[in-house]
Image (tube, helix red, strand yellow):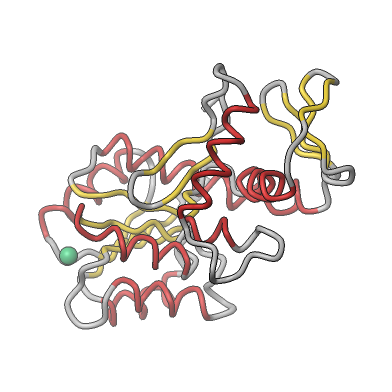
Amino acid sequence: MQKLKILLIEDEEDIAALIKLQTELAGYKTVVEADGLNGLRAVAREKPDLVILDIMLPGQSGLDVCRKIKAAAETRDIPVIMISARSEEVDVILGLELGADDYVSKPFSVKVLLSRIRAVLRRGKDMPEKESGAKSLTFGQFTLDLESYQLLKKGKTIPLTLSEFSILKKMLKHRGKVLSRSQLLDEIPNSDSFIVDRNIDVHVAALRRKLGPNFEGIETVRGVGYRFNDEDE
Ligand code: CA
């Protein structure tokens, strides 16, 4: 079987060497570029299955590179995982809104990076067609009925507000992906700029209460937003 190809755009040589080594040990073929311009050329040349992109790059920033990858029809479906420093949460949010699929922050463990890589590649493969025409979405013991706007647990209805329904639906359609507050806010019917991002936290808190104390699928991603994890992951 042909190896999946990763393009790593990272200017710090030590980190680049470590990621290349570890991803190749894990069975991927990894190509490294050290700046945005060569990175974009390599995206076109190598047609990678996944791009790992440092945010702080010399010349074009990682955000510029991400924007260009996601703007071009030939490359927009290539998943992008950003690498950021702790202090770059704002950039992470921007990157997610530009279409990046996930991020890890430095310093990160190789284990976390590899699990993100696997999750993003898996999502790219089976999510779109599997759930685009679905009438309901299931997770654990719950079913979200997209036609009746109801949440069911073992046949029992749990009432949701329209905002809660919309947020949960968005999360379920992007399982495993970090969503920023404003990406979730976009889903709320009739929301406008007067609603502040923090309102999302109120809706999510209410959702968590309704899902019950045993449900831990909604993860708070500090400083960035939320991520929905399936319980078997
Ligand atoms: Ca860097």
